[in-house]
Image (tube, rainbow, N blue to C red):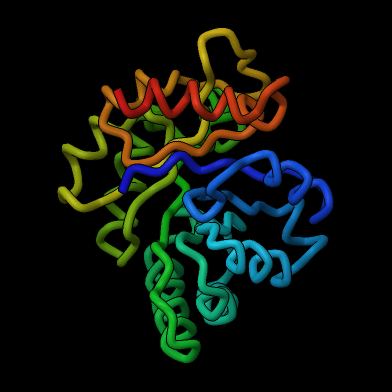
Length: 236
């Protein structure tokens, strides 16, 4: 599975389903529900998407003390989603406890556990920002490699990173460790607030295991055509 995940960066369910109704074969879609939508609609939006057969990446980027993250993941593990996220910067114990909570929740609900993905460095972060604002002395590449290895050793199934870092991550982790990549743009698109962007074709060449695409699809004049163009590049 190498999905194209559409980021549903909308305010509410009405906007979401008005958008999704433009697509045929919705049971073949994979979407991302992030903070904006989830904090307004809550778990009910996940249930509505699942009813349509749509797979869900729930991207809440948990980052807190280990006990809090474990209990939150216990709740999210019951939601029958395909992927969830934590910040790798939360540390090894937090990631381990997140995985424990996720497994407990999915077992209680009798559903397949979601893949646990750790955020390395956001694709909106530059090396200059990382050094000046986070006071990280390592290079951005070294930071991402460290977080990827930390995430894997702590039980995560993969990372969220720029596709530019995928070859290095794959060399530094096991073959089944996933690299899911936001910061995807078509050649003609604006980078907006992203710093480390690539095209779908470039991501495929770099070894991406899945794309997260938002504005290049959702803000397109013809979202279905834009999705098709991305899929054509990606599958080549």
